[in-house]
Image (cartoon, rainbow, N blue to C red; front, side, top):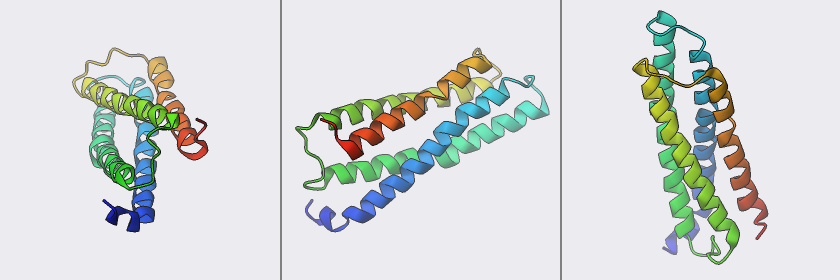
Length: 148
């Protein structure tokens, strides 16, 4: 794995680029759900939201999540990058697990809208929209500041 050290800055750049794309999608998809709640099911407008949500999830969010994970694993495998005894690393991993869980919930909610089975309110999605922001802030602080 020592060869990874030579690629460290490229791996880091790929990780950050992928993370930005993933987070952009994770911020936008719940916002689409807020607007989708405002239209009647089985209308042309609802069908447009269904298409937008599916394309956003499948064409942007899913690939960005996978590439974020790929580059992150390579970074973690690079010798000297992670101090495995530091507590910040485990807080980051816990928040990352939360992001993966939220991603899964977004996919489930998308299917519910597509099948006209949404049971959540506009307010619910407004509140849910804050979850990835909070998790991302904690992750960035852990990685940059490394408070413990």
